[in-house]
Amino acid sequence: MRNGNPAKLTSYSPFSAMILAVVTLLALGKGAAALTADDVLNKMPRERGTSYLDGIVEGLATARWIKDKPDGTGVNCIYDWYFQQPKNPVVDRIYALFGKYPDQQAGALMFVLLKEECGE
Image (tube, rainbow, N blue to C red; front, side, top):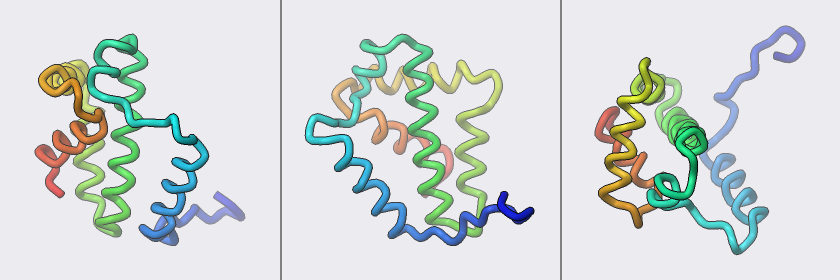
């Protein structure tokens, strides 16, 4: 909040989000690559992997909100599904899918699950 007024996220455009993504990727350099499901399953402790999944979900939820605004149904579905309590059954389902497709990007697999749960 600034001057007692809440920030308006609606002032951002999909173009702004794309610019931010490109700048971020360029800043990371040539050695940066998306993590595979195998990386999350076998190269990270579960707590770190779950934090990585949290970040993927936040990114996909933000993209969904930008796509659907002002309708928050899709983003709310994503948050309700992923952050349900207890969270372990959701994470177990994600890890089971990652085990089936270890060479795929973790973000792409999360997109598939979220599309199945909440549509496009």
